[in-house]
Length: 179
Image 1 (cartoon, rainbow, N blue to C red):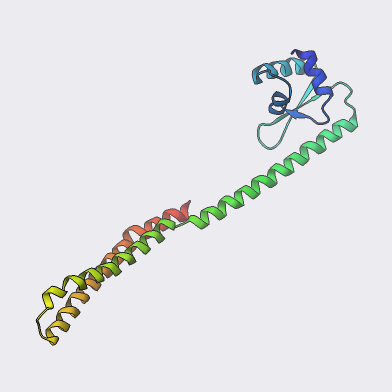
Image 2: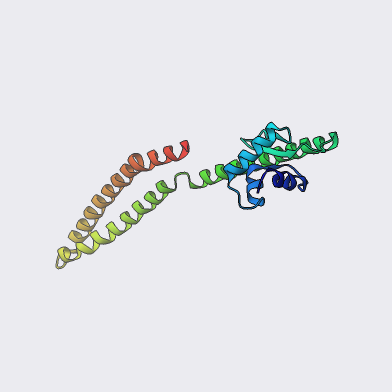
């Protein structure tokens, strides 16, 4: 394919195309070759290139036969694309912010739940382990031993939960809030 074929291709297009759209629809040429052809056609004043305001997008349109009406259509088309792109960017930004809010502090919550499981299973394990020690003892001694062991276990669990809360959960929540 050559420049003449590219001109014929552009004549058949109803709207301006980006470089990527031309490459996708114009046969088997590589982007470098299409860019070279378009640059040459632009130098020869055969093709006009318009810069889109959203990003680095350029639109190419054939100058031949271009009248004010088509230029107005081009302006309308570019403004429509600009509006659509800005709208899509704002929607994507809102979705990203919602996702960040939803996941903020999830690791902190998981660690908090795990510490509760540790607390419950610690109490169960401690109470099960003192059963052999209290067999054959008087009721008063059994109650004193159970209360002493359980209170010391509960104090240890509270210390563990507070340590986890201040040294792990709060820093994780702060780092989640910054993102």
